[in-house]
Structure formats: structure tokens, C-alpha cells
Image (cartoon, rainbow, N blue to C red; front, side):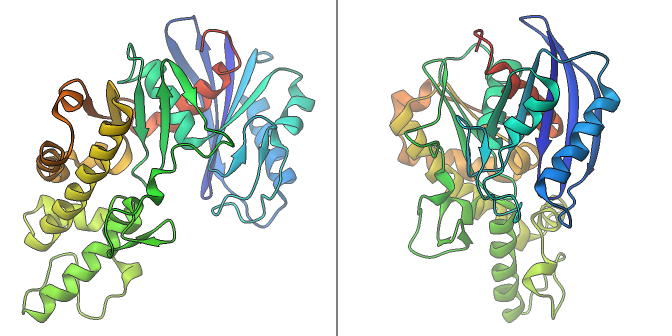
Length: 320
């Protein structure tokens, strides 16, 4: 089965081809480009179709599109993603289908990544798998009883919006939210505030210089400082890890999954987060549910976007 996948993001997009034999997936070719916000969505999609044509060896059997939400996967419409400001009510499935005349599936990126990890990664063989993005934002894809769960109107899995504390960094428009504590932007906020507190005590964190603004601090720069032993940076990740544990405990108690797979920042920096996360889970979650739930980094790592687009295509096949 010859698959074509589109991975659409606010900064960059990619197209990828793959072969699926019913058990194993093999990525073949990939091209990527910057997301051009100066042109219309229709023009940008046409550019991606041209890019796809340049790598296709034959007509694809199925096509998948992974894109940040909100979107309507049943109607194939991208609604109004915050990182794609001009993409309002864009019928991307219809446009791609008109060109290739084969089935096209659309999913939000968290759901697509969940399916990818379930089919090809650390979720393979499990019936109940939760995937957390833990990147720029925090969203989840839910595989429940062996099926992708979308919810009543496609909004299932928006765990970043859960409030974990009455105060704290802002994420998903809410102070003290799960996304506020466990995302790239949230960690940057935490690190910035902790740096200001440290400076008042005469301590200058290695990732921070006097006069720096919030936009000058990143989760990556804090992680690099933490890896070198900087105490403020280590404390920042410890705090994020603690709230990750609080959020995971809620998921474990409510959904009782086989596995929770966490991508991006957790995959890269598990060693900075895990001790605090584990301690909080042991304190907060039901032990029988904890005992049967594995918490794992993404196996697909930095290539998960490619696999997610391909996995979305397979949602249109009876095997998924």
C-alpha cells in the first residue's frame, strides 16, 4: 500500500511517502518547506501538492493530513488554528482529493501522533494508549479500546486546558493550566520567573542575563543549563515534572490506560523531569491503575510528524 502524508505546521510543512505492508511501515521520500503566511491557504496547499508530485513514484492509494486544530476531521475542514491565522474553514480534504482522486483523511496533530505511536511506536500491542504532545503546547490523542476517540465534536484530548493550580504560568489561555506547567512556553515562563527570584538573592542562572525579557528564555536554553548543573534550571524542570505528575495522575485515574506516551520535551529531557513526576504519581494516583500503566517517551522521536501523517492515511483503511 503506497501512502502519501502531509504534515502541516505553522512554521514548516512536509510531505512524505511510505509503504505499508499491513504490519510494517517504511518511510520512502520526504520534502519540506516553510509555511508561507503571505499567500492564501489554497495557494499553500497547491504548493504542497506540487511538492508531493515531485516525490511520488506512482499514484498514492491513501492520503493523510496531520495539522494543528481546531479542525473537523469528518468534514475534512481546517477551522481556525492559532498558528495558521489565515486558515479559516479551509476544505483541505476536498482540494487534495480533487487532484489525486483517492481517499484523504484529516486529523489534528495530537490524534495523528497517538495513532502513529499506537501503530508503529511504543504503543504497539496495547489497547488503551494516551499520547501527550508536550511541545509548543500540550494536547493529547486518545486510543481507547483499540480505537481513536474524538469525542462528541472532535475536542477530546484537550488536557492542556485542565487547571492544575490556582496560579502559575499561562497556557491555553489559563493561568496554572496543565499546558502552562508542561509545554515549551510554560517552562520558559517558569524559568524566567525563577531566574528573577534568583537574581534578587544574588544568584545569576547560567541561562539568564540581567535585562533579559521572557522571549529571550526558552525551554531548550533552560534544559541545557540544567544538564550543566545549574540549580535554578534544575528547579524549573523539577517544578514542571511535579505538575506533569499531577496531570498524569488524573489521566491514570480516569482512563486507566496501558501506556501514556509523551513526546518532544519529555522525550528529550526525561532525566530532568522524571523523578518529580514519578513521586507525584505515587502520591496522587490509584496504585492498581499505576501498576498497569507504562509511562514512556516517544519511540518515533523527531520523526513522529512524518509517521503521524502516514498513520492518518491509514485511518481510512479497515485495519485501523
